[in-house]
Length: 97
Image (cartoon, rainbow, N blue to C red; front, side, top):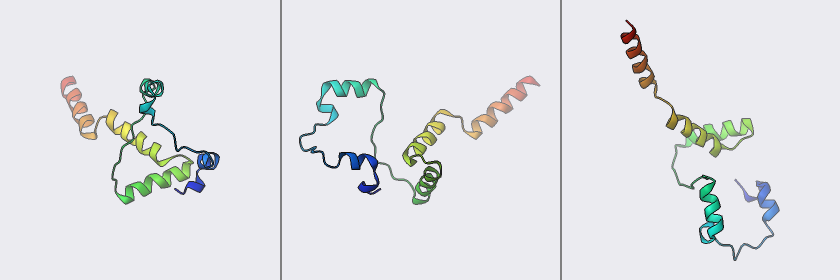
């Protein structure tokens, strides 16, 4: 993404952040960030075709591809796999018989 296409960039481009401190250096901000259960910045490599799918979906919905990836990861992390569902269903059926 180009800086010029970011609405926030246009608003803040004239501000001087030379003396800015990271959140971790300001105890009150660090505490607020920790309490809010925020997000953690990571670097992750994904296949180009996978990224293209998420970017295309984001463009179609007017959303953000990073948010879509985060939601997909949440779904996978909190849901059962197909194999687990099949196993559970078979056990229930055998127990009922």
